[in-house]
Length: 137
Image 1: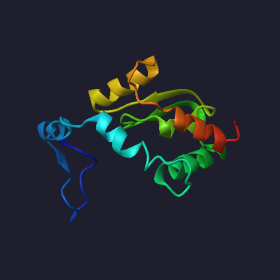
Image 2 (image 1 turned 180 degrees about the vertical axis):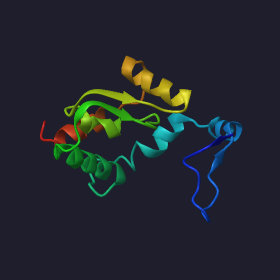
Image 3 (image 1 turned 90 degrees about the vertical axis):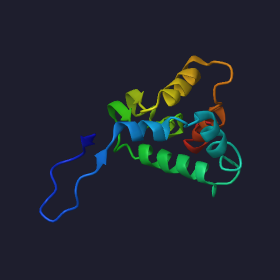
């Protein structure tokens, strides 16, 4: 295993020890398609209701990036999972955006979308909603 973080202060709890085998086996069965279907299609992705979690997240992200305080050359999204919604409002504020994830299945899901492969998750409703929030149509 690997020790995470600096040595604990006197009387502090022992550092978390991550055993690589357990960590990997815990994620071995992760299904990005099931995750996307469960979390990023209606009813959770109901764009007609601003009270639903997905439109709320998109609005918060749009407001955050619109402030202009978060910008630069490269944005690195650590732990992207199989999703891109969290990066949409950042596009105009960074020259380059890097999505990363621990799981190959999530990285492959992102590559399918980038390549425009048939069957890739359809992010176009999210893109349209972000454009609407940002006043682009």
